[in-house]
Amino acid sequence: MDPRDTRHSTPSPTDVGRRDLLARTAGITAGATLLGTLTPTPASATTPHTTASHAIRTQSGLVTGVPAALPGVTVYKGIPYAASTAGENRWRAPQPPPSWQGVRKADTCGAACPQPVTGIAADKVPPLSEDCLNLNIWTAEGSSRASRALRPVFVWIYGGRNSAMWASQPVYDGANLAAKGAVVVTYNHRVGAFGNLAHPALSSEGGHGGSGNWGVQDTVAALRWIRRNIAAFGGDPERVTLAGWSHGSSFVNILMISKLARGLFHRALLSAGVQYTKDPALGHVAGGYAQLAAAEANGTAFATYMGATSLSDLRALPADEIVTKVYAQGAPAAGTNFGNVLDGYVLPKSYTAAMKSRTEYDIPVLTGNNKDENGASPTLTMTVAAYEAYATTTFGDKAADFLALYPATTDAEAAAQYNNYARDEERVSTFLWGTQFRTTAANRSPVHTYWWTHVPPGHDTTNPIEPADGAGAYHGAEKYYLFGNLYGTDRPWTAADYAIADTTSSYVANFAATGNPNGHGLPPWPALRTSKPVSMELGDHFAPLPAADSGAKYAFLKGYLEGQMTEY
Image (cartoon, rainbow, N blue to C red; front, side, top):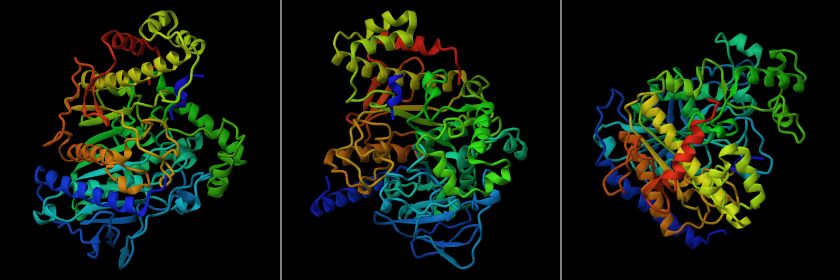
């Protein structure tokens, strides 16, 4: 097995009060600084109103919000952006949202889409329903409203692996970024079999020659809703950042290639992240995809496994039955493997083909990865024999060169050197993606890459998406800090954590506003230069660092990745 396949105390009342005060102070102070740096955008005919009690008119009806976690911020929860996906709408493109009479009190987050929730505490699980295409909006009062200027919009796509995938978790709370000048939107989309089923009959029915990627199509529907309605909440439809983590990052990556969302977003933030398009990791991580024929074969096997002989049969199945059987212990691999699909419509061409044909969306990009993912872990154990076997299997006749660069004579050294290699390889892969974006695709927009190194303290029992015992700077550990919402969990945060979160979320707010994370008082973050393989460390330090620990290691890993025969 490739070791990279592993990548994936209760505070006292006094502590809670102190953390809440620190979070509020950090958010308000940074917000005042950032708002003074924003370039005003002329307001539309719709005057933004952000008072919780004031009704906002959307195309579906009036809504009121409620006070958010930080003072001066209002949140509107559970607003439908599309119709229910049940019945005949299952495995179809999202349909227009329902309208309502009177004023809808948007004070409760909407249902999450069907998915397994085994092992998650009942009080952490929202209602599950196929009527789940809803979104949440955070927007602040203050200087933007007074000047009638519209604010940048930050749209977040959650990550995960089939479970704990919903937008209402506190780790996605947008109040701090709203206090820093953005209008924040999170939304639910279809996942698992409901979000990714491809089937020959669906490909025929849809009229595009392919199927699958229903969750990505939900994202497009959410972006279209935002385009039509967000100015009423103070947001600028011409300054939309589409951001996501892991699975969510793969959606951003797809929509940078797809024509379906062109003009609906204007910057991209991909957290854990992107890979060079010949990186073998794309064969087994969330950012990869299946060929249409393979995905349709999986869909055919799924129908057989479910005892269905037609699309009508499949659409008539209870959602709970689908979830139970797909994720049952011992379920067959054929028919239960759902992910992104190279369908020729939503994802019209491969990542490599998009770069070579210069059809990759030319917008500012911020992307990065984490120190303890890609197989790296502070708890990794590995024998010298296993390490050397991995080198032989992976690098073939270059194994000796690899072992000379990353030598190990003891088991402890083998684990340490594998970690060093995995971390170097991921930074090099991200840098090479950036060079493809700039050189192969001939894009002019800047790319800013990061390398997250800070370890969140303690354990998280608040957010089901977070591993209870996450090791090190694990996959997704930066989410708290990107949002700056440390108030949304019971981890034992320190003053250093609050400072890191303030800096990191200020970078995010600036990027949403201008396409450049840099701003007054922040450590300089250089844009990617194709002639200089470096990234930006975020977390324990805020400074540039090399893509690999030495020039020789960079050259070796660059040659290995560029020499791969499979292009994704």
